[in-house]
Length: 467
Image (tube, rainbow, N blue to C red; front, side, top):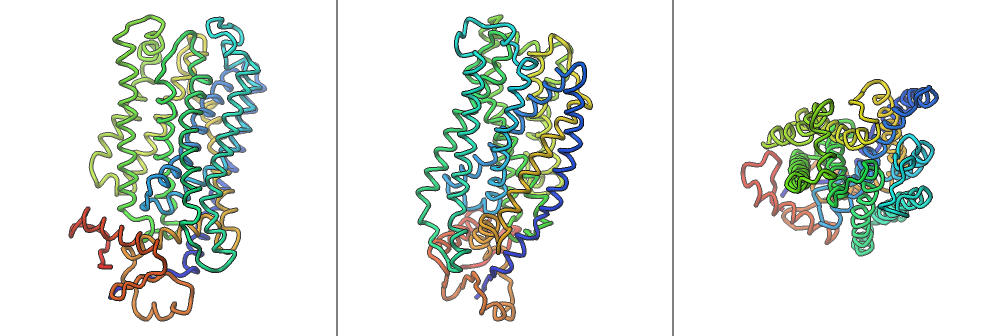
């Protein structure tokens, strides 16, 4: 008989080991330094470049944060038990969706420097590109998605909050229907809402250029950026929070496979859009693509293809680069920078009056400002989550993940350790007597064991135990 035990106190300790203070401090310093560059650029005699960088970073960070929350929703819909604590890392990005609404006000203020159709009206689209209606509908989209994100996360963490308040285990299937409903609505709203944002905030910058695939290309690229950011966060926090037995190499491999798969899907969407435009050979369509692949913009276009597709595709093709943390982080960072360059390539050539690329202190400072706000809001969410006894979401995620997989990650617990924790509120899985705390946890552990048997057999580098 092998038993795996995880007490509530252990999970509390792991949750409180999250480097919230360091993340918050980093975010605050980055936001302050970046803010100085941002303000300095705006009050200079030529603020247009600062506003261009602001718009680029708005499109990058808003899509990334929303994509992280959507990934958590997708895991809930797909019954992705393997996600575990990664779901909580993703849900922490909900705080930045509110910050996004506030940052959108900046686009309203700097609209004269960003949106060319304000000075050059487009009668071909009529009422669609009128200032009041334009900013009203896009603001409402961001507000609605932020509200849907908070509603989904609140319902998803409600069982954990109830468990903490009552001190007793809670039936985790009670709210499963509500959570699945919220997750489905959020996923659909993300696809629809961010397609409209792509059409309005980026595609409208290029006079008379139209692509029905551009919306999907944008929100799926943002989803890829979210996966890459989650890979970096999960690996970075694993050591700080002592999650070696919770975020295992198998989960890292699964997340790496998703990063690889959506890298290929990004290339598929890019080629689908490029092929139709190239084959049609219509001047009003081809100029957008070929202007970015020739002349001064060609190095940026080539860099985007290499960094978003070719380098991650070749690098993450095998198993070891996905499971070896340094290589996984390196390829994720390359992809993230490539996606940022893609946003730059989609926005700036349309509004800079025919000039070439200029990436320097202004762009770096504004990017630092947005990154600081992202990590500041992410750290705030984490702090609020476990400010109490264990935290509505973080400890709940750890508890759920430990309940799902602790039998595979820490089944070597000695009998003396088991006896010392028998009096505490714990989660034990007995092999011989098949004594599990909850039917849901029984199903989860049986699923985990069956997956181990089918997927790895005797070659797994994870501990294998018979439940």
